[in-house]
Each structure stands twice: as structure tokens, then as C-alpha cells.
Image (cartoon, helix red, strand yellow):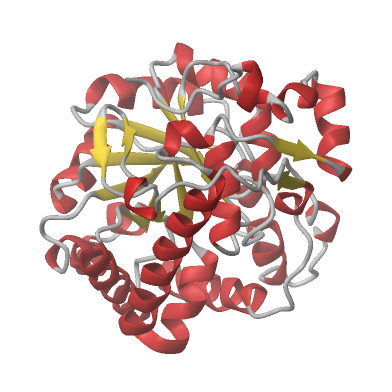
Amino acid sequence: MTSNRKDDHVQLAAQQQRQPAAYNQFDDVSFVHHALAGIERSEVSLVTHVAGIEWPLPLYINAMTGGSVNTGAINRDLAIAARQTGVPIATGSMSAYLKDESTADTFSVMRNENPDGFVMANINATTSPVQARRVIDLLRADALQIHLNAIQETVMPEGDRSFGSWSKNIEEIVHGVDIPVIVKEVGFGLSSDTVSALQKMGVRVMDVGGRGGTNFARVENHRRSQADYDFLDTWGQSTPACLLDVQGLGVTVLASGGVRHPLDVVKALALGAAAVGVSGRFLATVLDGGAPALITQITVWLDQITALMTALGARDIETLTRCDVMIQGDLRAFCVDRGVDTRRLATRSTSGVVSPTVDE
């Protein structure tokens, strides 16, 4: 059943990616154009820092899949692309491995094909510290992702229905492993309240995982015989909304969810993300053209990210957080209700307002 579910997830996620591009709240973010801001391309650095660790690039392949023969082949292609481009990479949820050790190679292929890369293992919030150490050992993982997916579980026909132990489990894992722990949402967003609660548990890095990309409420609803949860299709906060909501909390924030192209990456970095993760867009590329196609795509994206930073006059990721940005539309309405001062963002290049990105 787990293998079938993993294959279903891939198929349904890919179908969403192949639909016509739709509006998401990254479209409500724009840069104020300063025509003389540009610098020399050779001055631009893409280096960033996550959990005190230097990443050469602010882009990573985020959690997708694993647990079946087909998804193991996908993970192999993803790992090859990560190795060839130098981007960090995360496995999909390793719950399948904890239930059935015969699926181990569908996850360990990521380390085997990418022996020197930065690899993150992924588990759910019901995992014990002992189990967490098992997946870390299998992957020789450099960091551990814990995903939060209460809405997905609610819609999933065979999903969990009890979430009261999650906070306790997360805190125990944070103190029970010796590598950085990253808590992430799967597409419904992390609020500032959630981020503050996670800080108290000892979590120092969060991936906001906002609405706008692969919609797991919709994925799971397609798997229901009556498809009776379609009213949750728009649940959650977008990635830009989350980034704006959590500014000033002094935590390293990663961004994923709804990232469609390099401009979205640069917008997320400007809103305070230390790095940006992509899943759905890269999944569709791998399914269509394998590792070579994804290598080409990531290479082009990195080149275009550098080009955009050059035009903006941003020598590094921190400088990007001083670029003037305008917030409009539905995203501006969210900011008004949540008490986010968008006017300061539009003039921060001269006012000295900086969006914190790292915990150095």
C-alpha cells in the first residue's frame, strides 16, 4: 500500500505541475527598479549559511519521494543532478523505510550517487529519536528534516488523525540527534506563532513550506473515493506571506512552496530566506527528461539568479534583503491583518531596514 501511495503522489503532483501556470502570491511581490543599481557580475556571491553551515548555493532540491521502485529511480536522477550542480538535496519522507527496511535503497541511492553532497533525511513528526537516528545513519545525513502535514494527513484516506504528540516528539528529536534539525511544512505554511513555538523546542531552522506549489490536500482528495475534501484546496498561507509574517524572529528561515522560476527564488531571498527549495517544478523536469534535463535547468536557474542579483546590485544574499520591494494585492491585505509594515520594505535600501536571514 505504501509503494502504491508513493507512486500515486508522484503522478498526482506531476499532473498539478503540468497544468497552466497560475497566479500565486509571489506575483504580489515586486522589486522597485533602480536603474543605476547594477554591479559587476563577478562581484556576486551565491554563498549562504544554514544552521551555521556554509552552502555554496542558496538553492536546494527539496523533499519529494522514495519508498517504491519507481520513486527510487526518481531519487537516483535527483541525486545525480545534485551532485553535478552542487545543490543540497532532501529525501522524501522516510516513513516507508521505517515501516519496511526493504525500501532502504530507494532512499540510500541519494547518498550513493552523491557521496560528498549535502543530504537531508526527512521524517514525520511522529518519529522517535531512535528512529530518527536510524534514517540519519542510513543516509549519513548532514541535516534532518521533520515535516508537518496535519492537513495532508486529515485528507489522506489512511492518514493520522491525532497530532497532539508532535511538539513533544520534535523537542525530543532535536535533543536526541547530533545534526541540525529543520522543521518544514509540506505546503500549508508556517505562521509566526508556529515558528516561535518551534524556537522554544530548540529548533533553529524552519522551512516555511507555503501554499502555492504542489497541493497535498488536493493530491489526497483525488485518492478519496468521494473526493469530499475539495473545500481545503485553498487552505494555508503562501510562502511570501510566511516569510513576511516571521521577519524579526531571529531564526534561520528557508523558503519552499510555489517557486516557479528564478525570479521567485530571488524574491524569497529578498524577503529573508537563507535558501530556497524546489520540489514540484524539478520533479516535472526529471520525469520528462531525467537527470540531464534537471542538471540543465538548475544550471540555467543559478545563472539567472546571479544575473538578477547583478541587476539589483546585490553582492550577496544579505544585500538582497536590503533591496526595495513592493507588496501588493492579496498579500498586502494579509500583511495589514497580521501587522506587517510593508511600507518600510519599499524604502529599506535607504532606511537601513534589513530582513534577517541567518543565525551566524
